Length: 109
Image (cartoon, rainbow, N blue to C red; front, side, top):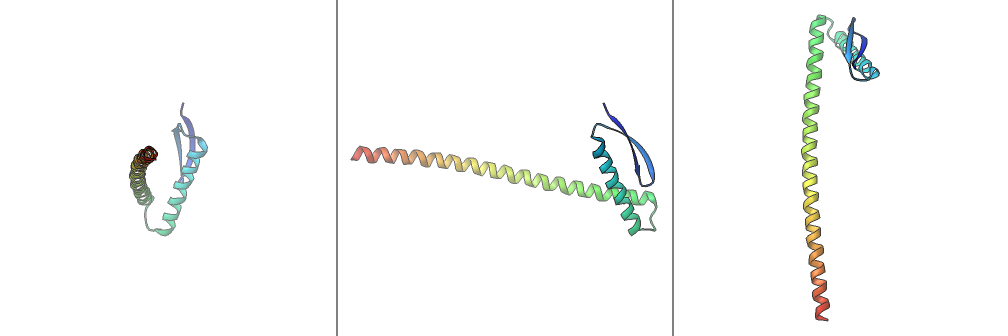
C-alpha cells in the first residue's frame, strides 16, 4: 500500500503516494530542492517554471547517460563472460590433450 509523504520542494508542498521508503522519497525531494535552489542562484533572471524545466532537462540528461553507461557495462560484462566460457573450453580441450598425450607416453614405455 503506498505511503502518503508530504514534501516541500521549490517552495511548494507536495503530497506524494509512493511504495518507496519514506526516507528515500524525502532524500530525493531534498536533492531536487537543492538542485532548484542552485539553479535559481545561478540564473536569478529565470522564472520558477524555467528553473524547473532546466532541472528536469539536467536530470533527464544524467539518467540517459547513466543508462547508456550501464548498457556499455552490460555489453562488456557479456563479452567477458563469453571470453571466460571460451577460455574454459580451451582449457578443457588442453586438459584432454594432455591426458591423451600422457596415455600415449605411458603406452610407449
